[in-house]
Image (cartoon, rainbow, N blue to C red; front, side):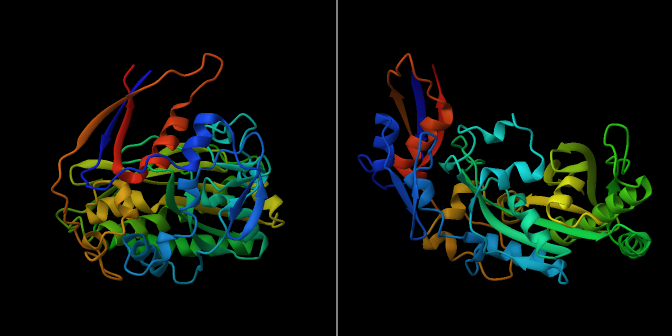
Length: 391
C-alpha cells in the first residue's frame, strides 16, 4: 500500500512518534482518557487521538482578534435580540448527537470511521445541532450557538477534523398569534430587502419534493420558511455585500436550493455568487416537530440554520488553507484585529516537500483512510499539507 504525503512549507521537525500513533499501529489503547480534568473509561470503539484531544481547550471562536471570533461577533451583531451561546462542552452522548435530531439508525455519521468516540456512550459532537434540544428546553425561543465540532476527515487544504459551526434558530407559538408575528416580520424584512443591493434566486418554500411536515399547517410552515429565507438573505448581504462591492448596478446574487437534512423539512441550502463562482454557504430549514416535542415545546414551530465559520472566513479573509486558523505564528495572528476583516497576506517562502510512505496492512484488518490520516496528524501535526492513496 503506497501513500503520498506533501509537507507544508516549513522548517519544523517531525517528532519520531507519539502515543496516539503507537496506539493506531499496535491496536492497544489506554484504559481511560482524561478530558477537562475528568477521567473517562475507554472501550473497543474509542478512536479519539491525542492530536484531537489537544484541540479541545483552544476554542478559536472566542480568542480575541482571531478571524473566527471576529466573524462570530459580526453575525451575533446582526441578530442582537438572540441569545448568544459559545461555551457548551464538546462531549455529548450519541443519543444527543443523533437520535434527538431524528438521524436514521444507519446514518454514516454514526460510524467510527466518521466520528470521534470517547467510548460507546460518549463522543465529540459532530455539529452544533447536538445542543438544539437542550437549548429549546431551557425556554430560549431564538439563539445563536457557536462551537467547535469534530469529524474524522481527510488531509488537505479545505478539510480539517476540527472546525467551528454556528447554529441559529428561532421558534414561534404554533397558533394564530404566532402566525401573525411571523407574517408581520416577513413584511418588515421584505421591505428592507427591496431597498437593498441584492438579487435572490428562490425556490418554492414548500413543494412535493421538499414537503411540509404532516403535523404542520401548510400556511404556517410556508410563512416560517419565508421568514428563514428573509432573515438569512439580510445576513448574507451583511456578510458579503461590502466585500463583493454590491451596488445597484452589480447587486449581490444569492440563490436557494432544495436540500435534505434529517432534522428539518422543508430544507434548503443557500449559495452566494462571489468572485466569479457560486459558493455554498449554509444549510437550513423548518425544524422537525419531533425535535421540538423532545425539547418539551410541542406547541412551537420554527426554523434553524447551520454554517461553518471557517468556510465563510476563508472567503472573506482570502485565507487559502483551513489549517492556518490553528497557527500560532505571529506572522499570521498579527494580521488581524478585533471587528475588522482584512485580506490575508501569505508569508511562507519555503517549498513543499513530497514524501512517499509504503507499508503492509494485515489481511484480517481494514485500514480506513481516516485511520491513516489520524496517524499522520499524531506524528506530524499540521505540517502535512496533503495525503493521497497512490496504490
